[in-house]
Each structure stands twice: as structure tokens, then as C-alpha cells.
Image 1: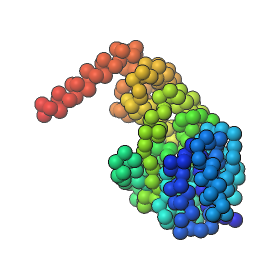
Image 2: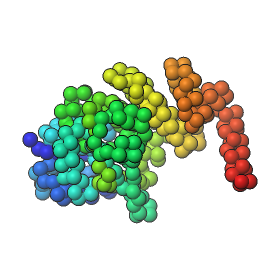
Image 3: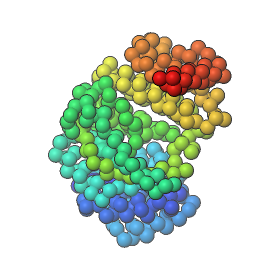
Length: 333
């Protein structure tokens, strides 16, 4: 059995694809397969894939009808023969020893999943910064291997980005899949993995390079923001059906509410009003289902009551007044 399957969805990635593939074939761990799911690319991505596959037999190219990224990853998992699986976006790349470090640690710990740190790479400036993805877990336990129940209150205090390697049997036995949405499709496996895992490992070294560029998430999110609300209800159902739902629900709500408010702040202005009323409907659902306790436990959620109570323009005005008062008080101090 192959040790690791790397799964790469590809769609019109000619600008970045060679660097991505080179980072895979140059890995110090050689017993790997690289599964590329090409979803009807109209640029030179297919030509690049063929060239690399001819040079390295570990590269397998699956040509599919146009799939969303999550659907392509699901197809990659079906084709994977590795003991472990890991996902790589076609505009990102691994550090040279990433797979060897991760394989050795997850195998030694006998964990279901290992999470690791990364670098943010900013294409506009060509600079990198350290992304401490695993810090909530390490600060909570002081350990690099633990049960998720040990970190139930902070288990979702990070985000669903693809800085993880999974035991393939664990993934398939728990029927984990990406949802069929254009955006936030990675939220479902993120929550489902963490609540079903028996043992989690972390690696503190940054092993992944996450590229930020103008074609990335926030540049395209606005017109598809409803995906995020659809995915919320799917994920909530998974959490509530999990074995230890009561221990995870507060962390889940904190993660999703923070995420929803964050996206609202960064959304293109032309979409803010529509987003506001979707957000308002969801917050009403949350308060009806869980009560005011969720707001009282978390001061950062105080804004929920204003969003529920006031129409868009009124709440916007009140929020701006609040921010202005905070700035004035800070200045006076």
C-alpha cells in the first residue's frame, strides 16, 4: 500500500500548477501517489499535467466533467490507494519534507488526523508569514497528541483550511465528504473529522505554503455567500448527531458566528444588505434553538441581538456609533 495519497483539484491553474506539482515530486518521502482531478480546464493545465505524468509515474490524472473543488476532492479520495490522504490546492505548495514529517508522526501516534502549521504567502509582495494554525490545541493541552474531548471547548478555534493529513480508513468509515457548494465546502469535513476522531496529532512546523492572490477566496465569495448559510445547517446537524454533541456545540457556534460576522465585515458593499438578512434569519434560528445563553457566554456575540432587533440601515448606524465611541474613549485614555 502506498503511504500517502496527495489529492489536488485542478481547474485553470496553469499559472501555479508546475510549482505545486514540483513540490510533490520533490518530497523526501518517495512512496506517494499524486492524484490530480482536472475539471474541464480551458487553459494549459491539462498539458502541464500530461507533461508531469510522463516524467513521474506517481502522478495520476483524472479528467472529469466540470466539478466544484469539493466534488473533485471527493473523486480523488475514491481513487486514492494511500494509507493516508492529504489535500493540496493547485495554487499552493508543500515544504520539501512535509509528507515525511507528517507520515512519520501520524503513523507513530496512530492518530486519525494530524494538523500542522503553514506559511501565508502573499503574491503581491512576494513575502511569507508564519500561520500558527495549531496553537489553540497546543496551548490547551501542552501535548502534540490527544483526544478531541480534551480540547472540546476550543476544538473549532481555528478554521477549515487544508493543513491536515488523514487516516484513509478513518475518512471512509465515517463517510466524510466535502459538500457540493462553491464556497465553504470544506466546513463539513472539518467539523465531521474533529468530532469523530478518537485521537488527534499536531505538528508545529510550517509545512504548507498558502498562497494569497486576487483570484483567491474573498475575491469570489460575495456573489456565492448563500453557500455559507446552507453549509451551516448541514454542519449543525452533524454536530448535534455526534456522540458528544453537548461538549462540542458551544465551540461550533462560536466558530460559525465569528466566521459569519467576519465575512460580513469583509463582504463587498453591494452584497451587504442581502447578506445581513440571511445572517439575521440564521441568528434568530440560533437564539430560538439555544437561548440567550450563547450570547451571555460570549461577549463577542453581543451584536447578534442588534442584528435581530433592527433593520439593516439602523443596525449599521448603531454599530458605527458604537465603534466611534470606542475610538474616542481609547483616544481620551
